[in-house]
Image (cartoon, rainbow, N blue to C red):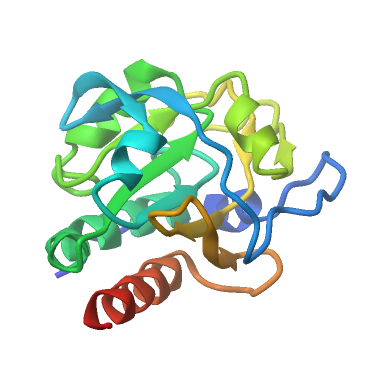
Length: 198
């Protein structure tokens, strides 16, 4: 059963960047830029390397605006609920946001959201988002569903499915495709399951 997710209004605000120009996000067929980032799994920090993850199978890299906001909470919870299905398909998941590690450690361990089921990485410098040509935005004075001020930039909600050859085989965008956060999960799961069945 999905938890009650607060902050629906916040989710609507965070879904669309307000102050950054539109970029041409990477598309299907492009090579996915490699990256290394500090990440958290269940509140424990480690170094995530995309290249290493791809050696084991497809990777779902999903960018999201901020932990503890309505849409991002729903997306993380849905990924956590489906994590065993991704693993069964030979795929792994990594979430990426501009959150700092203190916030990510809390979110990664929160039983209502990531629940220690998959890692999330910090991109405070927005270098990873930039390499994927994603737009970012700032929202001065924004607070999360706990009432805590958010002091980082938001990355647009885009999900990539990347195959073992580092090629992007699917792109899901809440801006372009009007997908809800949980639809990012459902569609990426369907794709990796189809790869596994071949």
